[in-house]
Image (cartoon, rainbow, N blue to C red; front, top):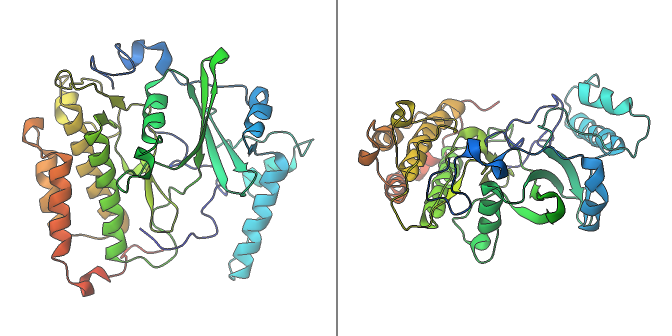
Amino acid sequence: MAGKAPPCSRRRPSQSSSGSSGSGYASSSTSSSSQTSLDEDDANVRVTPYWCSYRSLIQTRGFRLDTYKDVKDWYHDYWASLGSEGHAVSKDLPGYIRACRGKDENELCRDDGLPERLFRGTQCSTGTKVVIKAVHLHSREYDVIRHLSSPPLRSHPMNHCIPVLDLIEVPRDNLAFIVMEEWSSQLVAETPCDLGHFLSALRQCIEHIVFMHAHRIAHLDVSLRNILTNYKGHYACIDYETSTRYDGSTAARTSICKGTEIPPELERGEWSDPYKVDVYALGVLLLRAMDLTGYDVPELHVLVKPMLSSRFEQRPTAQQVLVSFNAMVSQFPSRRLRMTCPNQP
């Protein structure tokens, strides 16, 4: 929903990064990786590793966990970038102050704005900033991420899963590390944005859900906070903690309320079609995206209405939503697509 990255696209002035924190994080009897509910399944609990114990292993795979020196260096680069563009610089930021208090610059420095299962780092060979997430080796999340990141799925144009650079398994500890590119959760940047870019972002969100459903995967926590951008026109989905793969042997059903946007039937304690749960949440995402950017697209409201039906059987499939969305956008004149974002900073 924006052009290139602003200088603050990486992390930390507030020491908080809600989108890339892995904060979104559904099962049914047809799950391929578990036969029990999320609450009862030990493999799907959140893990908190002692990161120092895995530092060397992660480094042998070509990634360096952030140290106090790395954090201070990032702030120095950030301030230099701001200064070069004429912005005022404030150096009394909590993250920088905490990094300066480190007794050994080479000690690991965890970002307090992230859950303990996440750690920031760098790919040694390229300098690419990464976020490393610790998960249970036999969790549904790891099963889904491994599947979506495997060839040929990872190169499919409709697969908008966050780029995964490596999967590091530690079988003796039932642990795995998912190494992801670090993208930004700030979907509206300081750079110019127009309606065409906004609709492209929404299309990518819809495409990814269509892609997941085509491979019998329900995300089950579709929300705006689980969408990131690299500010190069690409948007990605994160947080597959509640996601479930289905084997197709029976009709997929779920009654678990673990997502951000909960449809009425789950609120009532009833069963639902997990794919239609995603469609409902996707509809809410489209509405929230319009509120965030200030774009009020009447045609989008028409598209969303059946997605929010109180009866899941009456909601369209994600594929039908995508077809309708593309048909809608094809009718927009180019002049309208060039309309700038009303809520541009």
